[in-house]
Image (tube, rainbow, N blue to C red; front, side):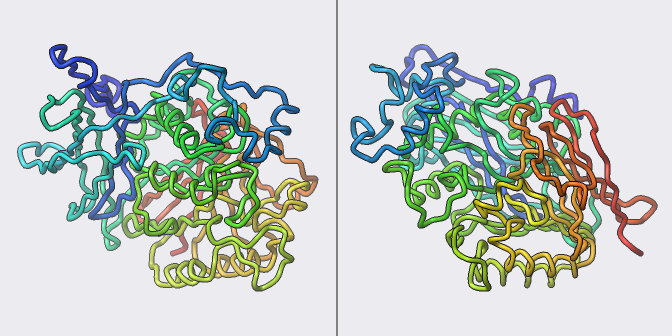
Length: 499
């Protein structure tokens, strides 16, 4: 790992607070930056302006504690949700959301971005000053184009309160672009899921895995969904402001901020960061005035990607292509009977997936899905019928598994499941790698006796999956490794491309 990361030359948030202008003229990058959707010639840089450089800790706690209180709250109608139907009396009397634990209140202001090839700062490009958008939670995205392939880039974001105010905060980061598809490139990427705020294992700093993932020097990172948990107590997201608060507190944690400054990322969403548990767009609400559409709006605000569509594919050189899919927005109701018309992905996404996979000549192909296709799942999950492993989705699941099984060197990586595993589907032969939850406290044991049928590896702790694509003596090879939260190697699986 490069020593300059640990010297904080590039990781520190540099605050230049000029006293003569007063605190009201000072703005910060309390949620850091997110570098996303990196290709061989483009990237997106996301940032947000805040009133303070760090989250509020210890902060004011929320009032729902016992399971009976949670169950009662879930049954509330809109009239019981308190003033303006916003927070449902979930905060103590007199407290505001800006006082809540982990809060990172936003601020109006202006930002600009400079970027340049590593070692060539004299040739940097700088954008104009641009205002953050208060209607998008004070965020801003910069779309970088015409980048050079397989090239390191440094970025610098600056902030000021207004045109007449001085620059009061500066933040630096870096990333490397993908090689073109004709050239081999060694790539390492990491995957995790389920970053639930109250299961973090490094207190105010966040999650240990973000420090641990830095040690494997990833080229990029994939969050496989459930970034936040709108529908779990303390609090429930009964208003769009609370949904934004969930993202602000999770991505204000210092370990996460530092990691995302230097590791470009791709984000997926599942039920808990879409809206409600096991949700679909037309589901009856348990979330008060906070709707599924609100959840989609907030997700688009908070991640470094375009608003066009949430399913996409990226090529990293000759030997790697990844596909990331959307499993909520096009979903039929879970309770519909299984059949050819019941869909989780939607016809357009299914056609896109099969066409782009068939057109790819990448050596290794990875489908990264927020939900599993192989499993096994918990036995009780079959009653809820929420993923392609469950009987309620057998028709579309069989179609996908058969197609993937026909491809050369194609594998599935999934989030959602709270244990790490490798499974082989008995009919199609495809291998699925479950990355596991981000923290030990969020990990669970597989509650299904059929685990011996096709579970190659299973581990009931938190952590992450790393995948390294390299050429060993000229042969394309994939190293898939499960790690614990401290980065310890728990299992290694090697796939060699046939000659």
